[in-house]
Length: 358
Image (cartoon, rainbow, N blue to C red; front, side):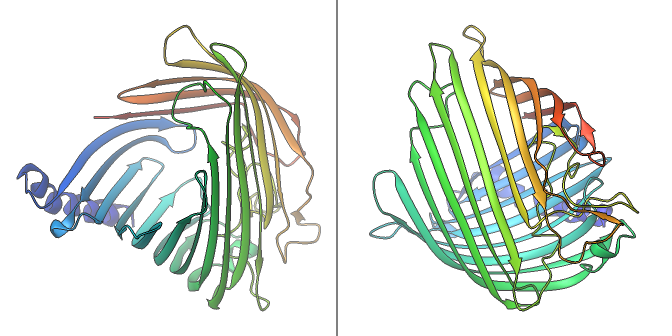
């Protein structure tokens, strides 16, 4: 799939890019390239093309992205229309995507469509309700695990989704001048299709200044997903913890595991949190932080017996991180040491993420 994906996305950029260079008045857009490196995906290059006001309609936009390297690749194409209403916004969205990364136990491609009605219910709160339909084809499972291989093949889901967002203060600056809080909830009920499920996720983020260049930051996310009518929860909807949340573990390094193949299975219950003491270095865009991360993922229906590990013990790690942000990109480095782990967990003490754009 990898060579075909790269060829397709390159062709799309070549077709769409002349509209930018021609300076057509009917639309505006941006074509950008980037290079990056992370411990998860290795060295990568990326290209993105974003167009707005397609056909002279200020509400229509499209975006094409591709990112790839020696350890895999992924691409997506999205078209949306978001006309403003007398109150709130109505958003129509359609997208197609493919991904094939070495760190994932599967290769997939899919598409989805949705319509979402967002309504403000106050100066800081917004709620949304909508319909969605998605189709995914898991074309390859890179494991002999029976739990993973039962998900191979194509399937779809359709239903309703609800979301809410409360936010006090902006999270754009490096460090806050005032306390700020964000609370988000997302719920989906997919009652139609081959992959019926119900899911709920709640995420919070809070930052409090402790001085001119110091702040206390915390994050917490928790969720659960359940299959309906006896349907198993697809690997696409299960949670794989690690790498970012919590740091100190590989992606999929904690949580349910097939002990025979060594593959992570992902869990239908999960949570992850972090507490950081952050300090900006002088007037430079550099932030140094000390952190405590924790989290867990557990429960995979059908994964029971001596060949599986599916406990819900808390994992935790302590460490320090350095973040540098500039106009051309950002660099993030974290050093973490697990202080609570299980014998089958996979540790990753150093993680690096570098991204540049030009």
